[in-house]
Amino acid sequence: MKKSRHEKIVELIEKEQIGTQEELAKRLNEAGFLVTQATVSRDIRQLHLSKVPLPGGAQKYALLQNNDSQLGDKYIRVLKDGFVSVDVAGNLLVLKTVSGMAMAVAASIDAMKLHEVVGSIAGDDTVMVAVRTPEETRLLMDKIKGLIGE
Image (cartoon, rainbow, N blue to C red; front, side, top):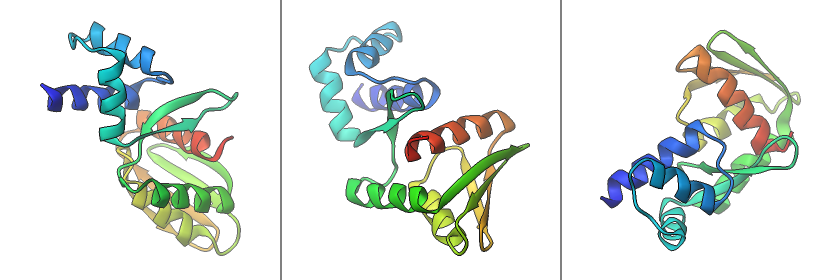
Protein backbone atom coordinates (compact mmCIF):
# COMPACT_ATOMS: atom_id res chain seq x y z
CA MET A 1 0.00 0.00 0.00
CA LYS A 2 2.78 2.44 0.92
CA LYS A 3 4.68 1.76 -2.29
CA SER A 4 1.63 2.41 -4.46
CA ARG A 5 0.83 5.55 -2.43
CA HIS A 6 4.38 6.81 -2.93
CA GLU A 7 4.11 6.11 -6.66
CA LYS A 8 0.83 8.07 -6.75
CA ILE A 9 2.44 10.98 -4.88
CA VAL A 10 5.28 11.14 -7.41
CA GLU A 11 2.77 10.99 -10.27
CA LEU A 12 0.65 13.77 -8.76
CA ILE A 13 3.50 16.18 -8.08
CA GLU A 14 4.93 15.64 -11.56
CA LYS A 15 1.59 16.38 -13.24
CA GLU A 16 0.17 19.06 -10.93
CA GLN A 17 1.38 22.07 -9.00
CA ILE A 18 0.78 20.87 -5.45
CA GLY A 19 2.15 23.25 -2.85
CA THR A 20 0.78 22.07 0.50
CA GLN A 21 0.40 18.85 2.44
CA GLU A 22 -3.33 19.49 2.63
CA GLU A 23 -3.60 19.71 -1.18
CA LEU A 24 -1.61 16.50 -1.54
CA ALA A 25 -3.74 14.69 1.06
CA LYS A 26 -6.92 15.83 -0.75
CA ARG A 27 -5.66 14.58 -4.13
CA LEU A 28 -4.60 11.25 -2.60
CA ASN A 29 -8.00 10.82 -0.94
CA GLU A 30 -9.69 11.60 -4.28
CA ALA A 31 -7.49 8.89 -5.84
CA GLY A 32 -8.70 6.33 -3.30
CA PHE A 33 -5.87 6.52 -0.76
CA LEU A 34 -7.31 7.28 2.66
CA VAL A 35 -4.57 9.35 4.27
CA THR A 36 -4.16 11.88 7.03
CA GLN A 37 -1.96 14.95 6.98
CA ALA A 38 0.47 13.13 9.30
CA THR A 39 0.79 10.27 6.79
CA VAL A 40 1.42 12.74 3.97
CA SER A 41 4.04 14.53 6.07
CA ARG A 42 5.84 11.22 6.67
CA ASP A 43 5.62 10.31 2.98
CA ILE A 44 7.12 13.68 2.01
CA ARG A 45 10.10 13.05 4.31
CA GLN A 46 10.56 9.47 3.09
CA LEU A 47 10.43 10.52 -0.58
CA HIS A 48 12.78 13.46 0.11
CA LEU A 49 10.44 15.87 -1.65
CA SER A 50 11.53 19.48 -1.92
CA LYS A 51 9.53 22.63 -2.46
CA VAL A 52 10.62 24.54 -5.53
CA PRO A 53 9.60 28.09 -6.38
CA LEU A 54 7.17 28.87 -9.18
CA PRO A 55 6.83 32.11 -11.10
CA GLY A 56 4.82 34.58 -9.04
CA GLY A 57 6.17 33.46 -5.68
CA ALA A 58 4.17 30.25 -5.22
CA GLN A 59 5.86 26.94 -4.46
CA LYS A 60 5.22 23.31 -5.34
CA TYR A 61 6.54 19.94 -4.29
CA ALA A 62 9.13 18.36 -6.56
CA LEU A 63 11.14 15.17 -6.49
CA LEU A 64 14.85 15.65 -6.97
CA GLN A 65 15.97 12.11 -7.63
CA ASN A 66 19.22 12.55 -5.78
CA ASN A 67 18.27 12.06 -2.12
CA ASP A 68 21.13 14.23 -0.88
CA SER A 69 19.37 17.59 -0.52
CA GLN A 70 22.65 19.49 -0.18
CA LEU A 71 23.78 18.04 -3.50
CA GLY A 72 20.40 18.97 -5.02
CA ASP A 73 20.90 22.52 -3.77
CA LYS A 74 24.30 22.61 -5.45
CA TYR A 75 22.79 21.51 -8.78
CA ILE A 76 20.18 24.23 -8.52
CA ARG A 77 22.85 26.81 -7.64
CA VAL A 78 24.92 25.83 -10.71
CA LEU A 79 21.77 26.08 -12.82
CA LYS A 80 20.99 29.54 -11.40
CA ASP A 81 24.56 30.79 -11.79
CA GLY A 82 24.87 29.68 -15.40
CA PHE A 83 21.35 30.32 -16.70
CA VAL A 84 20.71 33.10 -19.24
CA SER A 85 17.57 31.99 -21.12
CA VAL A 86 15.54 28.99 -22.22
CA ASP A 87 13.50 28.21 -25.34
CA VAL A 88 11.59 25.25 -26.79
CA ALA A 89 12.23 23.59 -30.17
CA GLY A 90 9.93 20.58 -30.55
CA ASN A 91 11.03 18.04 -27.97
CA LEU A 92 14.31 19.90 -27.37
CA LEU A 93 14.85 22.42 -24.63
CA VAL A 94 17.57 24.92 -25.52
CA LEU A 95 19.24 26.68 -22.60
CA LYS A 96 21.57 29.60 -23.12
CA THR A 97 24.19 29.94 -20.40
CA VAL A 98 26.98 32.23 -19.35
CA SER A 99 30.01 31.55 -21.56
CA GLY A 100 31.85 28.46 -20.35
CA MET A 101 29.01 27.26 -18.07
CA ALA A 102 27.07 25.02 -20.45
CA MET A 103 28.80 21.78 -19.44
CA ALA A 104 28.24 22.45 -15.73
CA VAL A 105 24.57 23.33 -16.33
CA ALA A 106 24.07 20.19 -18.47
CA ALA A 107 25.73 18.03 -15.82
CA SER A 108 23.44 19.56 -13.18
CA ILE A 109 20.33 18.88 -15.24
CA ASP A 110 21.43 15.29 -15.87
CA ALA A 111 22.28 14.75 -12.20
CA MET A 112 18.83 15.92 -11.07
CA LYS A 113 17.39 12.92 -12.94
CA LEU A 114 14.25 14.79 -13.91
CA HIS A 115 11.70 12.38 -15.39
CA GLU A 116 11.25 14.39 -18.60
CA VAL A 117 14.97 14.48 -19.45
CA VAL A 118 16.38 11.83 -21.77
CA GLY A 119 19.81 13.47 -21.87
CA SER A 120 21.66 16.66 -22.67
CA ILE A 121 24.48 17.94 -24.86
CA ALA A 122 26.54 21.02 -24.03
CA GLY A 123 28.69 23.43 -25.98
CA ASP A 124 30.30 26.55 -24.55
CA ASP A 125 27.18 28.60 -23.85
CA THR A 126 24.32 26.37 -25.05
CA VAL A 127 22.72 23.21 -23.67
CA MET A 128 20.34 21.10 -25.72
CA VAL A 129 18.17 18.86 -23.58
CA ALA A 130 16.35 15.97 -25.27
CA VAL A 131 12.90 15.62 -23.72
CA ARG A 132 10.66 12.55 -23.92
CA THR A 133 7.72 14.29 -25.64
CA PRO A 134 6.99 17.75 -27.03
CA GLU A 135 4.27 18.16 -24.37
CA GLU A 136 6.75 17.49 -21.57
CA THR A 137 9.17 20.04 -23.02
CA ARG A 138 7.05 22.98 -21.84
CA LEU A 139 6.55 21.29 -18.46
CA LEU A 140 10.31 20.89 -18.12
CA MET A 141 10.88 24.51 -19.10
CA ASP A 142 8.45 25.62 -16.37
CA LYS A 143 10.10 23.27 -13.87
CA ILE A 144 13.56 24.71 -14.65
CA LYS A 145 12.25 28.27 -14.42
CA GLY A 146 10.74 27.37 -11.06
CA LEU A 147 14.00 25.91 -9.82
CA ILE A 148 15.90 29.08 -10.66
CA GLY A 149 13.16 31.33 -9.31
CA GLU A 150 12.13 32.92 -12.59
